Length: 283
Ligand SMILES: [Fe+2]
Ligand SMILES: [Fe+2]
Image (spheres, rainbow, N blue to C red):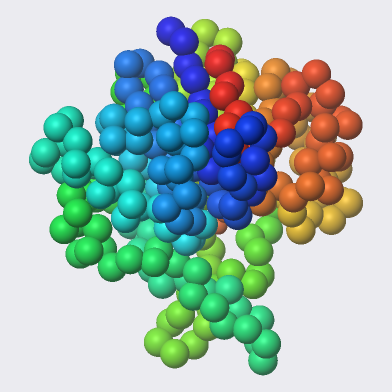
């Protein structure tokens, strides 16, 4: 069963004719299914898809990793393209966590309060054909593909960014990012795990994927790891944990940050790759 992961949107352009923009969107093809995992922040997704020879209207389902704008802002444009397609006259399923529509903010007291949630009302997306399936639990996508569901926090060295908030009434409170989730693909070589932003932590997500599937071997990890603000201690604990998993392919992107990506490139030379816009990984 060939599995391909094509990066439609990422902070940096990795191939000619693609454009980089802060955010992420991955197209995963497995079990005869095409799953769009996030949409990036804008209509750029359709331009990059065209540049890569991908017909965005042919995706079977959409999964949202969480409710931040940089993973959901392209939704409107994608739904318009899909609505024009003969394949989806009845609309398209979008799988996400129930907290995905919670208004989210980047907040630093006395300095900044910026809305960073999904930039469209749910009703507007539904009018364009979105059929939301919101679940805290793992959702089966095909014979071998499933979402992680809500990621359990197991290790203490991964912390959710303190500047990410939600509102309780008028009060800003820390966002636990319960909606953050990934996609798991079962293969003969082990699990392939796709991450959105990895806000709940890369190691927490991998441990959770093992628990959900009962499979220990992790073959590949692709996507955002949110190591952008990790200190030396967290990086070392993360590296030690990744070594324990014996991962064969590690394609980091987006909120990994260039400095942390460089550290991982050095530590995992044989497995590492930059997962930029235009990167196509065949597994
Ligand atoms: Fe995020
Ligand atoms: Fe992100």
